[in-house]
Every structure is written in C-alpha cells, then in structure tokens.
Image (tube, rainbow, N blue to C red):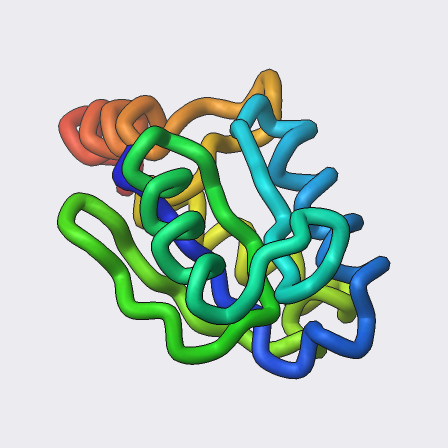
Length: 129
C-alpha cells in the first residue's frame, strides 16, 4: 500500500464528517490521521503540507480538508468532496474504489483485491465466468 493523502473538498466546515471518515478507515486496520489547518493539530498552512506528506510516506492515511497539497515521492493524492464521504451509498462505492486501488485495506474479514482476483481467475479457469 502506498502512502495516501485523501483531500476532502468542502470538508473544512464539517470536521465531524472528516473524523467519521477517519474512523471508518481506522476500523479497517489503517493508521489514519485527520489534519485540519489550525485545528487540534495546530498546523499552519506552511506546516500542514509537509506534515501530510511525511505522514503518508510513513504509511499513515492522511485525511485532510486542506486544498492544494502536492503528493511527494511514494505518496498518492486522492481528491474527493464532502458529499462522497457523507452519503452512505457514495461512501461505499468510494471505499470500494480505494480498496481495489490498494490505497486502503479491505474491512476485516473481507478478502483482499489479490485474493478476489485469484478466486475470479480460478472461476474463469473452471468455466464459471
């Protein structure tokens, strides 16, 4: 899994939604940090971007409402909007895309994308797909 920064546009006004999204990621076993400018982290704009990149480089999924962060080496920037993480159906689809791209772990007890592909390959081999 590469380092991941998830930029949530429009999320600055709804810190609770960012926290809930972070908790969903953490429930999957991911290490997560929610970063807001001037929030509990106390980071200013100039400090936030390097901090986000450093966290992501070390395997922490960073959820932030800060815009304009450029990904560093070994990190991926994924942009979304607040509606995608607050609407249940859209959140499920978004989480699935993140899982399949290898950016977040699957929920506990669910097979990994590699395991799913192995099952699909075996089913194709047997003629079921």
